[in-house]
Image (cartoon, rainbow, N blue to C red):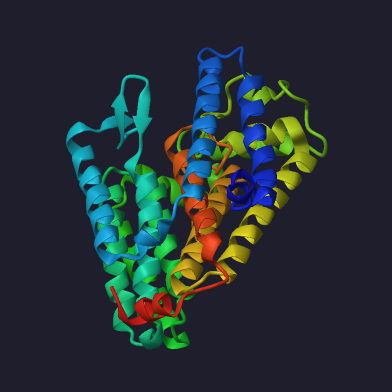
Length: 376
């Protein structure tokens, strides 16, 4: 029985993830001389162990109940409610009211909302696959993303709001819409960005985007983080400075080395070789997720797997992009490496659900397929 249960786990996926997790832990531990740095390392070990426990626990459960529309709507409303409550009870950190803080424990509802959005869009598009060319489904599905997008943007958390948009945009692209509809989606995105720039973006958010074009224009203020992170990455050169010898982080020029800029801190110590290996490991993780998606029993499993891959790719590309100075600084964490429990729990929960779906990936029952297209 135990052997049968363990076969549900894709150990190759675990093998690819583990070095990334250890890379983040080594980076935090190397700065143990910093005030509070040991606290980051010790807490992260607890979060990693708990997240792996969630991963294995979810892998053993049967998550086909998530195909039920009522369950997904309840989850969507629950986390939307939590995003609303943040405006009353949320903890303010770095100018954003994005966290619930209970003593030493903090939780960011936006992270779990990203996973819920993947699930609800997978359900919506799977039921309407045969009529996906109807343009109305693009805009109806956008309503599911618009609610959390606005609530998160108002915190303000520009980075997480962009991930919400990219999940919707990416899952819309893979749902089978026509080229004309692709153009309409792109045009809608451009229009939305223009409206956000005029009416929603705060001055500091505009500064971050302008720094994407010319980060040298204000190196002492809004462009400081970009400059310091690129210096850290470049100073690592080929082989790196060695564990614990990253001067940009050790001398505290690099801000938020344990969260937003953990990749820069890692690159300074491990160099191009270490950074390249981490990037390859991320590619292999995405490859495994897409493999599972291609073997999905029904369109729901396939779309969930692709949505989960989009979720990870968005985080990885945006975080590394802002660390090397080609994208604006948005406060996005790097999966498996950045400090924090909310994003780790969400990432491993999503992978656990994907593992659970493996048990029936090759033998879809006819009733399942019928309900996928016509049922609830």
